[in-house]
Every structure is written in structure tokens, then in C-alpha cells.
Length: 154
Image (tube, rainbow, N blue to C red):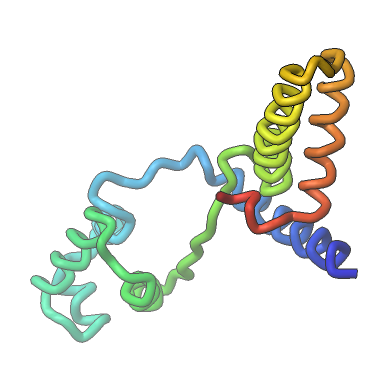
């Protein structure tokens, strides 16, 4: 039951992340989103400051902190609300999905385990055929994937 719940949770999270994947080719504006949106709307620092009830200098600092990636989500959300926008953020797996990321990591660990064992057996003159080693790696990777042990991320 626990593995079924984990599997379902993984599938649901992958679905959510997949919706964000279309955004992966969007690069961050060099001066940040707040500056880009404000200037595109032809809104002055003072006008945005008025909406947030802060000074023009504070808006300039917010834009600088965003460009330096030192701004909080809370502050970005406040700015978004003031601009009548919705802040959206998320993560996109570089491997395309969390499941692929797990597959890749499980295979790496399985190779280490099986090849270490295989090496020991070879020293004892009990060497395995390459096809058998390949199958053992595949089986072990599947087992690791099913169990999702904590050491998967060591």
C-alpha cells in the first residue's frame, strides 16, 4: 500500500510538473520580471511604489533584489498583487520527469552494487556472463525503484 501511494504521488507530481515544462525555454529577464513588466506597462517606479505604499527607491531595491535572485516569494507575491498578476513558481525536472530521474539514479546505484559483487565473484573465479550482469543490474534497478530507499539520494 505504501509503495502504491508513493507511486501515485509521484505520478501526480510528475503531471503537475509536466504542465510547467513548456516554460523551461523561457529565460529570466536580465533586470528581472518586475522591472520588465513595469517598464513594458510604462509604469514609473513612483506609480508602482504608490500601489505598494512604498517609495520609488524601495521599488528600485525590489527590482535589484529580484535581478540578483535575493528576493523572497512573499515580496514577489506582493508585487504581483499590486500589478494585478498572479505569481506562479515551480520546479521542472532536468531529466523530463521525476520518474526518469529516479530510473537514472536507481540504475547508477544498481550498477555499483552489481559490479562490486561481480568483481568479488570474479576474484573467487566465479565470473558471470555479461548478459547475466546486465540482467542483474536491470533487476536490481527495478527493485531499488520499487522500494525507493533513502540511500537512493546519497
